[in-house]
Image (cartoon, rainbow, N blue to C red):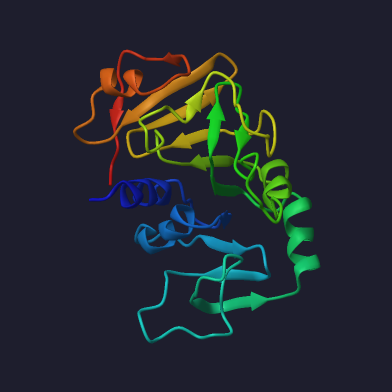
Length: 217
């Protein structure tokens, strides 16, 4: 199982019946393919769609239906489409129960950087800042380390922040980490990953309880 699939599958375990959840590009959107049976979650795409499901099979996509990243989506019975301004009324009005966004870095204060690397052109952070402060729960989904093996879960973010002190949960291919007032609490490790390995590849300080769970995938 790839790291991306591990993360997407674990994200899906956070869905609760009836919640409105916004999914960012990449791994967060992938989690729609793994919604547990019997969980009727209402997925929102910030470009103006409510109630979509798993990605369509090859050759079955509708060119008129896509998420904010341009990826094809499947609208479910009872779904609705609306303009961008109405979509952001939902977000800014506090009607999104949970958002899952990718990240370049997160830190032990719950800060998140997910939009800019200095020196590289980017069009802007899009709706990330609205989602990060408007959603009731924020999950950061990211690889635990960069390509050089350096931790992306830091004591303090080094990149420009998208929002400060907003992250509630961090999900990587190695661990699930909760952001609390006392610090980062290691809640789960991935199958085959030890607590010591997570500590080794995490720059931030971790609070390790006596019993650390194993991800259910």
